Image 1: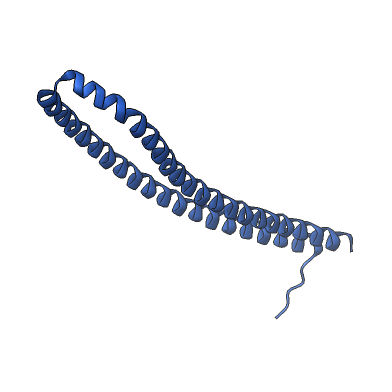
Image 2: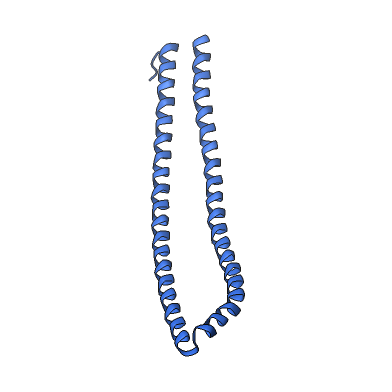
Length: 150
């Protein structure tokens, strides 16, 4: 069964359909973003927990190091401990700095690479979605304008 529809009525119906489609797309986009926020929050919490664990371990090692230094001081004397510190500091510091910076660089690099690749993928998706929405709206307007003129 067909109904007679004027060009003005068709234009309004077409525009309403385009608006409903955009609303659905926006709702889906909001749901995706909510899921990403939840995932990022969970990752953030895991990283904070790991940071807390590493900080606790560092404090334990610093305490243990202090006890060992005190034992060395008692057994060898202050001057011998100062000499040991002087000899080992150059080796330890350079090794520690190199090792620490490499580890931090690797961790930072992994985080940066994964975040940048995720951001790039997200940007591509957003560009395609925005382009698609724009084309949809333009097509709807062009189609309704054609009908109104024709």
